[in-house]
Amino acid sequence: MKNRMISLFVVFCIVGCSSCSIDGRPGPDTDLSSTKIAFVMREQNQSFIYVMDPDGSNRKKIASGAMPCWSPDGRQIAFAARNEGNWDIFYMEADGSNITRLTADPSEDVYPSWSPDGSMIAFNSGRSGSSQVWRTNVTEGDGDNSWGYNLTQLTQDSPHNRVNNFHAWSPDGLWLAFEADRDRDDPEIYLANAVDGTNQQRLTFTRALDEVPSWTPDSKQIVFSSDMHGEPQSGVYDIYIMNIDGSNQRRLTITDEQASNPSVSPDGTKIVYDQSQGENSFIYVIDIDGTNPVRVGEGSNPAWSPFFLGAAPQR
Image 1 (tube, helix red, strand yellow):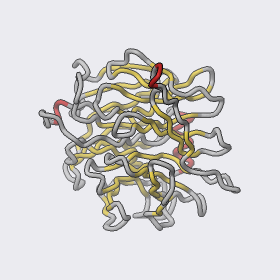
Image 2: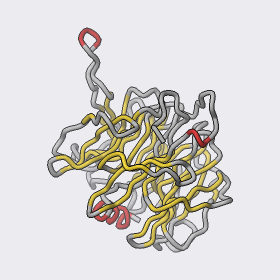
Image 3: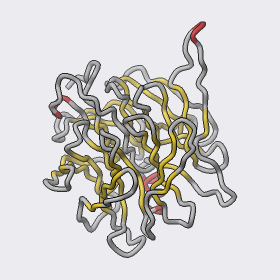
Image 4: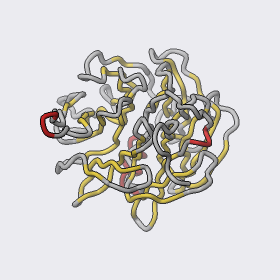
């Protein structure tokens, strides 16, 4: 799976799943038709961010970039994009306007995850020597109310350069779920305190590749991708769900391909994910119990928006 993820980064210019965590506090309208799915399309050796309705209709290109993640009010999207030869974190309005650069470092800064209060963004960076989880305030404040970006490293480098990445912020704001290959090259799912990275807890214990975690809106379950059902590193991955303590692991999809990058709808009833074989990738939506799969179009790296607490993107 690591080779697959590296290949996706090189070929599709995407690092893993942007399985964004979402607020989970619906506004007056809790109809999923009022939500959007952001996703990535590869066109002429570039990656572009699109949005669409949950049924795959009204697809609209909004910006160049990859790894989209919604702000908790649905008004903005954080993403990664190449700038002067390397990847940095940006954010923009949900219609693609007012693009703002958040990080500027010679290392690769990728895979943003917005905090549920909207004030911070966690991201992966190699600036410390290996890929680790960092967080920063979205703004530094103004005038007398300037508090700074408070850049903080949440996971630490090891002598063997083991990585901690592909993280997702829990909707209650307490935890970051992430993957780490600390024992060998077979990543497991971990938890860490979202404030300072402490109290780390390992949730999966397999010889499989357990990757790209995402959250249900109640912060009680984690959805992820794994090849645990077959031979280790078989290249066949499915979507799984488990409790926050790692118990009650259940397989939700049955494929002979690569199902990955899950993102849960804001009402907790559905999951969007991508399924790829070779260079082709399609987006599917299933019920939270794994039933009723529907293919909604080409694309990868989908992220389901919250219920819009602000102005929703124009259809």
